[in-house]
Image 1: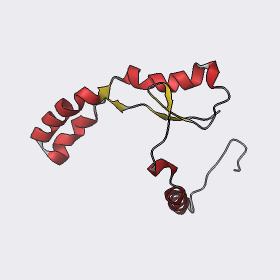
Image 2 (image 1 turned 180 degrees about the vertical axis):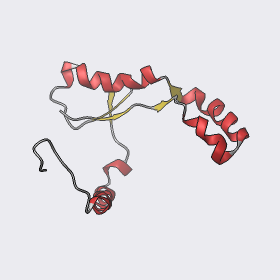
Image 3 (image 1 turned 90 degrees about the vertical axis):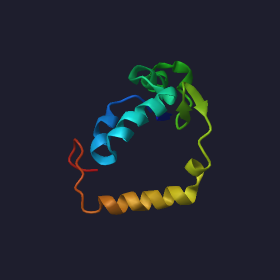
Image 4 (image 1 turned 120 degrees about the vertical axis):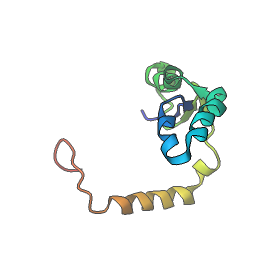
Length: 106
């Protein structure tokens, strides 16, 4: 089965790089501003774990989950024109890249 999972905004150390690009003030301020909407790494993993272990999801492949619940993807995520454009863009980026599988072919 496959699922699309949004873990939420996770507290990481990404802000340690901000000082070089945005300055000390922004590097200090941003973590304080986003803390109320962030999750710990453990909490962020819960939806992925839920989708892996909950047997009630066995016949719900292809759905979108956030906060351990099935959710409706945004309108932008359901836009087929955008999806086709993204697929075309990704394929163009991969042109000439040699992809290997265990058997040596795709």
